[in-house]
Length: 305
Length: 305
Image (cartoon, rainbow over all chains, first blue to last red; front, side, top):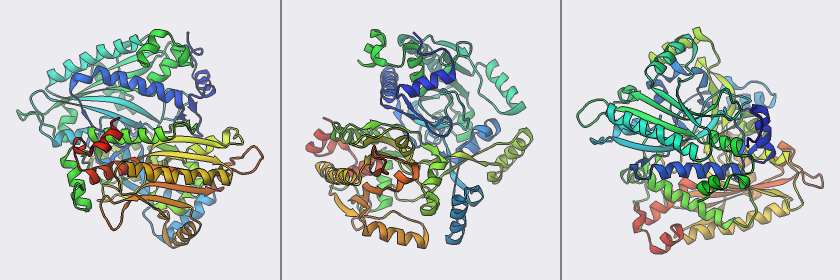
């Protein structure tokens, strides 16, 4: 039984009323409560369990990454509107006093700041690529898992569209054939995992939210080549279900950008998959209700095993 | 037996060689490997275990917070040099093309960005205060626990001085007497926990790294009033041990800034304590060696219980 009608505001209000999320002044940066966190981490452990024998390396990166990673991957061509670049104060005493006065007067203070070498990480896998280039890659390729806070500057009333959220990600690096086979395996695993939790999941080809007119061509190309798939579950709308999991085949884009090479000297192909952990958690609350103690036994057994 | 001599570069190199951290191009934003993460989370669970019966609410906030929180707490007066303000792109198609050209030409592109409503969170407890003001506080006060990525713009060769790191934090809210008693209890608990892991910990009064000449007075005041204590362990220097845990009594500063009131209408006092999880993890590696399988039995039993 759905927790609320399929409506973003009703669903957000329900999450707040049940203590599952903690409101904040700006959209898309609310806090999460105890029960929300418990469900989220239990779902994450199910993913880790499925991948247990796949031999993934663990890389845990901070929410900020080197700005050069966005520059090398043409991020600012495709998603300039989503970027989060980090600025700080580089001035001395006298300028700091001016800055302080502006803040106290309630005026703008952006003009006192300068760009740093770091940006918020827009996709869990980004910081892994320089590291993949730094180490030798055997004939069987490599697999890395990441758990990351990612940032997209898109404030929204939809609780499912956050400025900051967590992703459990896997990155596979190898030949084109290895990478596509792995992606296909996980596409089936992803749907199966979500269905086993009673979620009405379906998989579809998808495109990234590229910026502007040029972006429309990039999106068409991505769809034509079936480079991106998403698993969708209704959360705030039945007509437009929410992507809770995405699979991206990058061909040799990141291999070229960072010089990732296989043992035979050829450029590595890469693919990644990411589960949007807050979105899956919200899908569970919407599908089974706001109180996990009243969820169906089969779902409880799986998550609280 | 110490892992290396007390030297920042030798210790960093040792962490990298043993796969405990993964280098990144900019200082203070390196990745963490599987064993590092395992130790860090096991230490975090020991803290949670100690606080198990204290009745803490859980609030999990993203690494970005509302900019108004820094404005209301005078953060830009005290720590302007550490701030991480988030900028994004608000322009349309034609300007985006110019931006793209500058990025591809390797030129600066800061002039195309504008300030958003969010900043990186500089201390785990900050986003909790608006929420504490939103809910009624009973006679026994309130306790909240947070696990947060925090940001300080201070790139450094010292592995212990990171731009982004995780903190397990507790915030206590109540009368002055309740808050100070709680702080004193935890000051003893903190030293005891670290000593039980074989770390040569000692507690001392401390001051925050306030900016500029005015900052020196603030620091003197903080020391005189014993508002801040730190627990210190040698990691990269014996003469200047690293603060791995800190205790801050804010008096009614945050109570006033956010309008946090007790049942009798008086302004709440607050205190917080935070364990720097990466720093404790590094202290364990420095004190007991880079390979946890060879750590003393008593330490292993405690962490791998």
